[in-house]
Structures are given as C-alpha cells and as structure tokens.
Amino acid sequence: MDKHARSFKPSRLAAAMLLACTSLSVGAGERGAANPLTDEDLAWVEQGEKVIEQAQDRMGQESLFPDNYERAEDDAKQFFADLRRTNPTLKAMDAQQSPEGKRYANYSTLIFASFSLEQEGLEDILELASLDEQMVVAFRGIPDDMEIAEGVRFLQELALQYDPIPNIVLDPTLFQDHDVSVVPTIVRLEQRTTVDGNDRDVVARVTGLSDPAWLERQIELGESGDLGTRGPVAEIGERDLVEVMKERVMAIDWDRKREQALERFWTNQEFEWLPPATRSRTRRLDPRVQVLEDIIGPNGEVIAEQGRIINPLDSVPFTQAIVVMNATDPREMELVQEALPDIASQPGVARMTFIATELDADEGWNSYTAVSDTFDAPIYLLTPDVKERFALEYTPSVITSDGEDFIVRELTWEDV
Image (cartoon, rainbow, N blue to C red; front, side, top):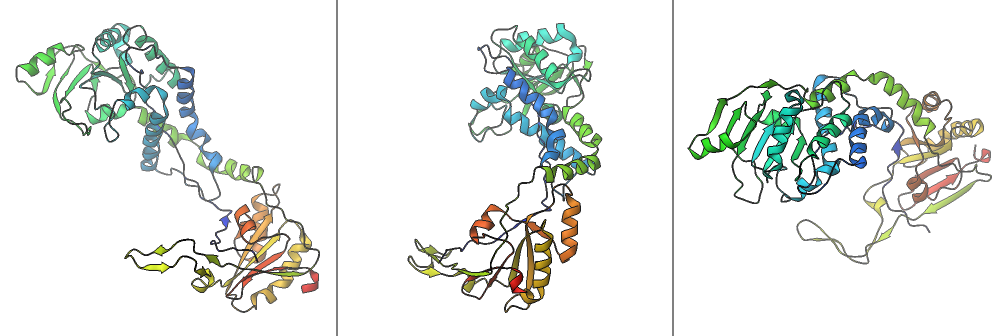
C-alpha cells in the first residue's frame, strides 16, 4: 500500500498577495578603487522604480492594496530599505561593519548636501570627502526633473573625478534622523569605541559650512551640540525619496491593477489535468509512517519511540469527503452532482471539499464563480503535492477515510 501521512492543505484559488515593495540607497563604493556605478548598479536602480508597477503580477483575488496614507508610507519605506540592501555599490560599506553593526558605524562625519548647492559647491564638498575616509556625503533624493538612475549617475560621475573616491550615499533617513532641513550641514558623531556598532550620539553640528575643520577646532576647544549657522545655506532641492515613493504608491490606479491582475491570473495558470475514469475503482491508501528516531517532547519525555508505526488518523480524524473533478467537462460535473447525496451519506463524512483539475481559463473568474455557485462552496485547484499524496490518477475521484486508511473512489456513471 502507498504511504501517505502528510497533512492535506489545498491551495485556495483566492490566494492573498502581499505588496512587496523595495527601497533605494546608493553608495560610491570602496575607497581608493575605481568603482563607478556599473550598468548592473543602474539596472537595480531602474528596477526599483518599476517595482511598484510590477507588483501586481503577484496578485490573487484577495489582494492587499494601500488604501490609505499610512499604508502608502509603509510601502514607500520598504521600497527604500530593500533596494538599498540589493544595491551592489553599498556592499563595500556593509563589509566594513560587524554583523550587528549599523551601516554608518565606521564613519564619524556626515555632510548633508543637495543638488541645490550647484556643481561648484558640490565639488568642494566631494574634494574634502575624498581626503577623509571617515566622512560620508549624504543626499536626500533626486531632482524632480531627473530620473533616479540619471541623478545617481550624475553623483557618481562627480565622485569619479577624485582619487580616492569619496563616500556618497542617497539616504533620506539620515536627513530625518538628524533633522536636517538646509544644506550644507555637518554632523560630527562620537568615535566608535566598541565593535557592536550601536547608535552613537552627536558630538556637535554646524550649518552653513562645508569644511569640517572649523567644527573640529570647536570640539577641541570643548564646544558641543548645535553650534548654529556659520555661513550661507540653501534649501534642499530634492524631495525626500520616501515621500516621492509614497506619492507614486498613492497615485497608482489600484482598482485597474486589480482588474489586470485577475485577468492575468488565468492566463498564467497551470492546471494538473487528469484523464476521466473509464471504470469504477476503489483504492485504499495506508497513511501510516514509521518513526525513524525518537520524538522527544519539550519536557524530555519520549512521545514516540524509534521504529514505532504511527497512523495520523488515530489522532486527527479525517471527517470530510474531497471531491476531485474536471470542472470543464459538463458530463463529469453532472456525474458529480448526481453522486453528491450518496457521498454525503457515507459514514464519517461531515463536510465536502471540492477540487478542480481544470477551470475554463478563457472565462476566468466567471468560470470559477459558476462552478462555485453550482456546489455552493469554494473551489480549490488541484496542486501537484495533493495529486501525489493521494495518488490521484483519474477524475472524478472521491477521497474519504474509514479511520484506518484513506479511501479513493474513482466514479463512473455506473455508480449513480
């Protein structure tokens, strides 16, 4: 007899989809090496812009959509976080920190910049950053008239004019964490004294200067905290990238995408077809399994000894009848309907579960609804694991249990 003891969990047609958005950050690469933004890097950036647009490809009928501002904010932040982890240009920064460390644990000075400083101002900052490996130049976003990949490439081309290459990141969360609203702003962090990479306090900060030398002198003189504005400042010309992503999420026509997703579901669906039964047959499937090693409980007690034969039906009774049918065959559907009263009257059958090997893909959800209405019950699609576990060979098949074995009956018109 076949051994089948694994639990039966059919996949519902109406499967939910979690909108898996990603996030964005860009770094310049390892210092001292000619490591520009590669075509692969740009591909990741461009892919990030399309992630939300492509997310609907993974939708089922019961999809989750950002129907309010808070959900859009969460999706946008996730968009930012994930793409940052996948962007190859940040791998050098990650490699320098301990597994538990923070991304900027090895850097002591943050200079907040913007495209609004124009090229000359940016070049001054990047030249200083090139000479100090402890310095990170942070940008909040990309100008509205630039595509993300275009803005990233512009930053990288600026950085590649210097040797060593300065550390540049596109990270709006830094601006949020340090409450930076104008540029240039310099933030000096505590020197790291441990390897755990815990967040470090701000020693001092100044606005209006792009050279940290003045700030360093004030710290040596015992000054700390916010030392005010000491030079000309500019508004940040780029919107927070997270805010931009939120707007994009909110602007998507989710109702239309739901409709498109439902249409594509059936086009992409693969069915587990089975041939129709040509004769009535009943088979018994033995669900018992042998314990290969002792099963120990949480308190150390032996739940099942090695070599013991266990029948899962002893502890979890099987009280349903599973009807597997080809829902595109009218004669087979009629046969199942005729057989239902007899199936429902079988000993131990408390409920019915209906599984289709096929539905009309051209009719899509209309086909699903029609079949579901016919049996006044949800319809599931046959999956390869269910097909294998119950050794299904023909349709229609009815799976029940007598308390010891699973019983598979293959029906024909002789049975009604």
